[in-house]
Length: 132
Image (cartoon, rainbow, N blue to C red; front, side):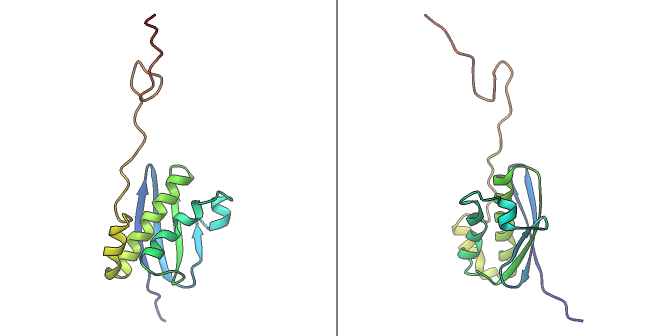
C-alpha cells in the first residue's frame, strides 16, 4: 500500500482557527466538507484570498486543500485558512519560505477586537459631550 504525502498547517486570525491539509492533486478546495464556492456564498473577492499563498509559492493547481475551520466569522476564517495554507506550503517545500515571508503570509495577523471599556458604549465610543 502506498501512502500519500500530506502537509499540514495551522492558521489563526482573530478568533478563527483553521487546520489545513495539503494533498498532491488538482487544486480542489474543501472547507468543512463543502466546496469553496458553496462556503464563501458568492461574496466577491473572498475566494481570491485562498489563492494568494499558491501564487506566491508558484504552486497553483498542484495541491488539493482539505480544511477544518471553526470560530469567528467568514472573513476571519478565510484569513486563518490563508495562514494555514502558507504554513503548509512552507512545510512542503522549504524554498517557498522566503517568497511566502516577503508577502507577509507566514506572519499571524495580531489584530483582534478590542475589549469594551466601562463608562463607554463600545471600546472607544464615548457619550457626546455638551460644553455649550
